[in-house]
Structure formats: structure tokens, C-alpha cells
Image (cartoon, rainbow, N blue to C red):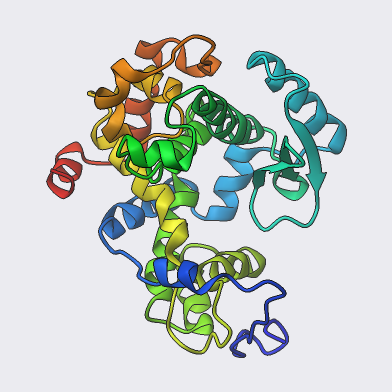
Length: 317
């Protein structure tokens, strides 16, 4: 209906499993705190590449055939010493690039085949396996592994640190580590809060021409709603840019190896928990082992995205 109506029909959504009300309430408010940074990142990409589609083609490379995706995944699992620990599936149906869940006690990574681009696939594996999975494994060894344990030690929520870190690792070793996806998700959510679906769809055309890609971003920002002619957002996707910018703001003072070893904790809790940690058998992903090089990569991300350290310090004192 939406595509046939020349993008004028406001979609009406029905959900087989609606999000719980508590979840919808938790994420009903969008934030504009980092809107300027989000726009700056996207403008940066458009200045350099002319369009998002061109950026994707030039920096992402070709979409890989199945056999090459399997080979790359196997090679990555060997790098992290995770062979046989993670079940990997390939899918044509996924809304996101990949998703990591625990199914019948086995960690399972599902990869969206349509998005498995040659130069971006390893970043996605650093995000899902090198960050989420390894931090999860380390978390199980700690005294705060359970929700009661988290309460007992007074831990802050793992997000936005968890997703911020994973998102940084997605682009970490790229020559041109643009934070495009996190920026556009942030921007789309912020505008969804006071626009209808069709207004939002038209509004983000300044950054993305492809209607299928725009549909996907609007869908994510409007999920949970039934009548999308009303303003309203599902703000969960703002966590990526929010986490990225908080970590970059404090990158000089965070002990990143320790942050990984402690498991699913916020960077703000590292110093407090350091002496309580169980460090035997914890695992650090291969790309974080050389702290100095790791920090150089973070500086490079700041420079390429034209982020201003003093502006971040002002926003996040």
C-alpha cells in the first residue's frame, strides 16, 4: 500500500507479538542531545561521496556470495578462538545487519545476507562476536553475572556503553570509519517523535534516496506504533550514537581491556569494579590487545567524522 500510494499512505501496523507497554513507555522519548553531531557525520559523508548509495558502494564493496560469507566467519572465529562456540546462520529476512541471541543454550549469530559486504563483514563480526559475545562470556565469570549480583554491586546499566563499544568496533579498522548508520538512526528517531511516517520518510530523503532503505529506517523508528499517522518514536536505536560519543569523549581515561574483561558493565563502573573482578580465563578480542594502536584507531574515527573534542566535553562534562 505505502509504495503503491507514492509514499502518501500512513501505514497501519499490526503485531503478532506487540512490544510490552513498559518497553514502549521506556523508549517513547527521543533525545536531541547529539543531533548536531549526527547531522555533522552525515554531511561529512555526503560531502565526500555525494550520496549514501555511493558511499556504500565505494567503502562497503560488493555483497558477498554465501560461500565467501562462511569463509570469512570461520576465519574470524579462529582469530578470536571461538570456533565451535557460536552457531552461525545466514538469513534473507533480517531487519538489521545481524543479530546475536542465545537459542537453546547456544549463542547463535544470524547474518543478513543482503548486507554482507566485502569490507564491512568483519566489522559486523567484531560488533557481534568480538564485543557482545566476548563481553558476555567474561560477564559469566564475574560476581555480578546475575541480575541480583548487578543490584548488589550497584551496577549502572550496560547500555549505552555496550552498544557504543560494539558500534565503534564495527568501523574500527576501516580506512574510512564513518559512523553513518548510528548517526542516521539517531536522526530518524529524533524526527519520528514529532512526525508521521510519511513525513519522516520524505524528511530523511535528504540523506538516503533508496526508498527500501528509507522504509527500513522509518520502520525501526516507528516500531511499536499501530497508527503511524501520529507523531511518536521508539527511541532505542539512539543508543548507538549516544554510546559511541560518550566513549569517545572519555577515550583517554578508559581502560578498554579492563572494560572488556569486566563483562557487561558501563565504562563508568570500571575503576570501582577493577579490584573485585575475576580475571582468570577472561578473553580480550584480538583487535583490543594492543592498547596504543586501539587508541590510535579511536582518534582516527574522531578525525574522520570531524567530531570536535571540546564540543563533546561541553555536552558531556
